Figure 1 (cartoon, one colour):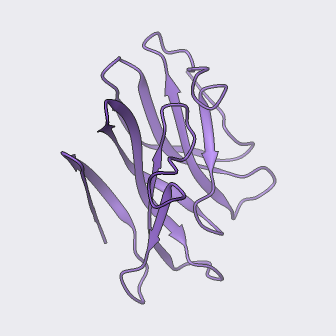
Figure 2: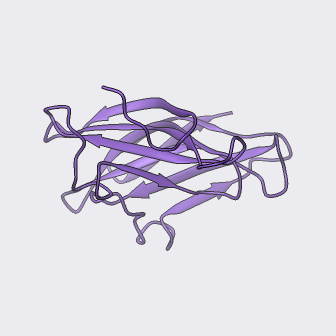
Figure 3: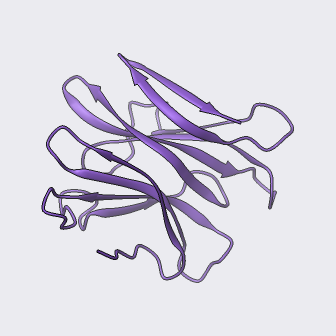
Length: 150
């Protein structure tokens, strides 16, 4: 199966299977008409392999995290009050930079919308210093989100 999100590069970098057999794929896509502005990208497939229409309306979502290139490196499922939420980590370019990134983290509801109970806006961007930062791995332990990276 080939699935397009944008009109240019779409890159999948992580995959996880939910308890009901739905498959979530994370990565990034370049916005229409742009080779230099990408957003977090999530797809959700039904166990049959078809796009899940209950996720973003057509099985795919693109979400801007920062003001430039954003990309998912890893995803995980977090159970929150019995609801499986998708947590995605990666990087977001610092405002005004073309090369310097920060760690980016977002949590999504089962329908693909950002979770407003997570940092009030569904996403977090954090810098670890002057160098470029990126989250590359994630683990969920109870109600804690653990993020690894560089």
